[in-house]
Image (cartoon, rainbow, N blue to C red; front, side, top):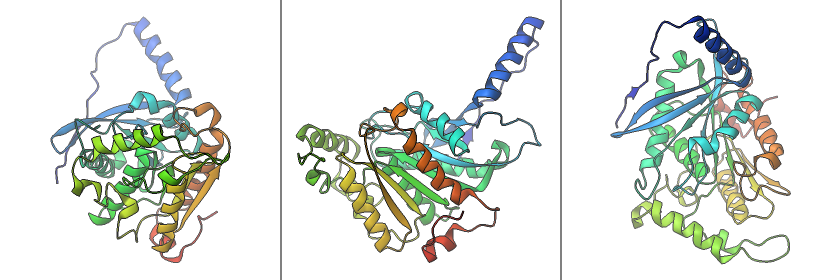
Amino acid sequence: MCNGCVVNAPQVTDMSPTQSKAAAAASATELAEGRVTEHSVESCGRTITVRLSYPPGYPEGKAAPLLPWLIYLHAGGFVDGSLEKSQRLARSLAVTVPAVVVTPAYSLAPDFPFPAAPEDVFHTAEWVLRHARRLKVDKLRFALVGEEAGGNLAIALSQMLRDRGLPEPRAQWLIRPVTDPCLQHASGAVGQDGRSVPLEMLQRLAGYYRDYLPTPAASVHPYAAPALASRLAGLPPTFVQVAEEDALRAEGEAFVSRLQTAGVPAQAQIMAGACGAGVEVSHDRCQVWINEGARYLQGYFAGDDDASPRTERQTGASPPG
């Protein structure tokens, strides 16, 4: 397993009075909008950028309290997406949850097929856990959030943390997740008007998977195809949101059913109206999605550091609060 990280240190220089005023103004703006920092993290010979978004008003310094944190994994079918495209949602999550939002620029296919992306998100989590106090996050009070392909990677990360013996998230929130490279549920999805999902959408999803999973072995690996995984027990409580009319609705509902069968507290929420194109893309029309997901995570973030999500997983309890 490859580890390590490189953090770009700020350069300290003398400033003129004009520069000092500009810096003070920038600092005030940063405090009002939420501080954003970027770091370089090593992952299996690759260097990826990891961005941290802090809630507005969060102070710097040793006396600043430790905050809960979440890893947000962006959409894009494993082949597209970026920190810039997901930054608006990341900052919204930092405010709404509230929490420090960690967003890795994970490697994209076809240049970097499976397992590059899961390894990148795993090493991101490992890096945050190792540097939690310096980053001002509460080491054990964290959750995973992902949309579409990011939802797939969130599930993969939950499995990897479980399998590799690292601290596990208190919960995961999956937005329109893709879980099944066979597309057996998406192919049967129909809209409210009774029409089947357009062929072009299925072709697009299949194309994403061909780029991401170029070998037969990869296409059935549990970290790539969680819908086919034989072992889902031990994953964190899971909240799945799907759009009312969406090719991914049946797939999301089926995955929740599999989690419940494995003894994992899981629930699906069918969201009416817009956002079938995704929360990142349709952010203005999707605030209710964000509010519902934030409320779910707030229940698991409540309480002291000794609160154990493992107990909740065993008993099937609902979020506290």
